[in-house]
Image 1 (cartoon, one colour):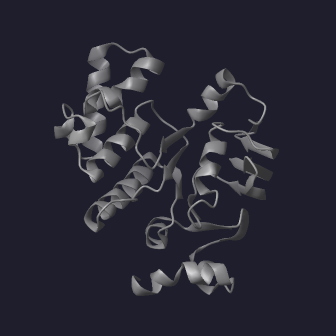
Image 2: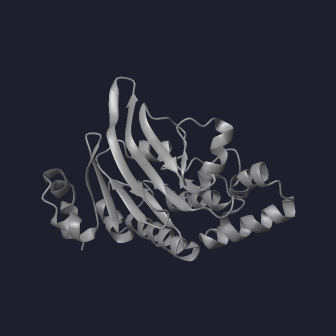
Length: 245
């Protein structure tokens, strides 16, 4: 379980999160919505302990992570498979070495076993023929799939975290990534949290929606409640749905 308890966070003088509180189970399929720069990605970084809140508590699986050091945060981070928007592949390494990197660093497996797992992961995400390619040779959709494979490389986790998983992709590749996200969650039998500003992506994948406005949670509910919401900011934001569903 993830618990945010009155969490505040600022970048310098700019307050990004203003006392937000929510609880999320690992098996939920959650979309965090809101305008660009509104604190959505900050939530993911706080969950992983990459940054610390100014005030409040963040509890992961019963552990308050706000005072943990880097070594103590390692088992917390391993509870999640994370794909940030930019994919963050190592430009100097081919696909297979990108996926193998954390296995080699964390699992200390022999090369033969590492590459067997790499091939299996690339097959699962549909880019098994790309293992010798460099990141610069990948299309946007392939790049995102390799990033997902690498996120899966360290083994079973409790939840997937995706930061703008379809950003910059054409409609065909967006659909492919959405299908992959759903299929992986179904096969692993775990949930995910998606950060997105595209309401259609959230609608297709999720059953719970958290909406941020000016650093605060102004809506937290299911599909029916989202559509019926009378909150003006939410109504304006979801207008695109009525042209797609």
